[in-house]
Image 1 (cartoon, rainbow, N blue to C red):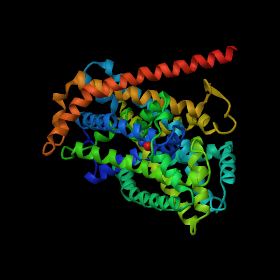
Image 2: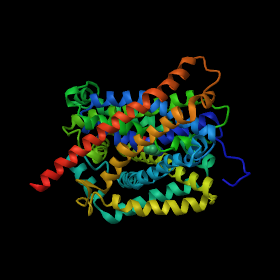
Image 3: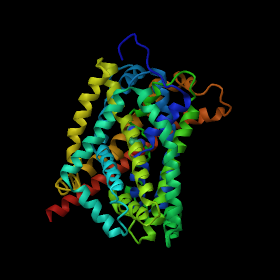
Image 4: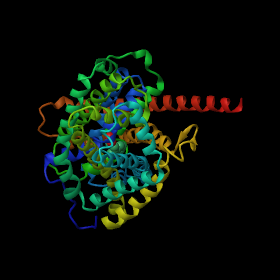
Length: 464
Ligand code: TRP
């Protein structure tokens, strides 16, 4: 933003909450949460996930919003402002880079949703009546290089157009109308899944924990997923918080956003797993899971075509409101710190993301077996690198910087002054200073240990 111009603010309180929830609720809830939970044993994973949401997600969400409103800056500027020395700027840069990396694969999956809107309209989705066909349709689709690049392009371009328009006309307006509709369609899917024969087994898988299935790597996935789903650890919420006015209540808003996001993820699980079990599918299908399941559910439903079109449109919009928030971080940084125009920033970075995303777009076809790092193709690698490493590391530095470097006494007054639940404020201060950094550090040590062990065993395999 040019010096002297007033910083744009959200049009209304509910507008902000919905936009932040729009950032949080996305492919992470509906596409990723079910398949990661499915790969990691179901209900036990869900419990660990909820634990991380409460002890790390919520406090860090509040911390990011506090930093944003306090400094009214993009993440890089915010860290410069609160940490004094330029050394801490790297946390902001790390965030900008993370957003960039996430977009390279996020926009590819966003492209899949456009592809499935087209397929739904043409009746190809509801022509699917069994899972074998659904799997074949999806693997042919995701292996088609030209189509993948085209849809990746269309998704990225749509996102760029909305971000150019700035926050109020773009991000806020879209979120307000569409999020409630998503909720309704999920309820319909749940009803359908539960009424299928054998659906109850899916409910058990999702809700009845079997802790023997839990491994270190599933705990790490739960942590990464909680950060990813809540849009934390890279300054997206710092950026959104920077557009908050002094009247907005941070504690309140954070509670709403975290609740809504977790609620939608649970609903998505409830919608998917009964259908998975009713159709005798494995819950560990990986990134294709919802595309293998949802078409069959709609294919066997009256007016299925209407619901299919609606579902994929809403998924597309949910993905879009999240991708916008990721792009907004980079754009806000360039505008604030380098003084570029919004249009130029969006054009340059949107194009770069499109180009860097091409290997991810090809990761289910021609580049399927091109391993970037120990058995991971480009898509998996970017996903793991960002969710498991970059976001929690970012969260760690956010907590340390606010709790230890800048000091909570300088920021705690940003929290709802008239709140009657005073203890919540203190609970937050305690958690962000004493619990979050240590838990994250511990998790990081475990993660490195787990990954190093994996790499070593991979190496011995290779040498044998
Ligand atoms: N939370 C989004 C989702 O669930 C993705 C996302 C948007 C995100 N902004 C982010 C993830 C910032 C991490 C950081 O789909």
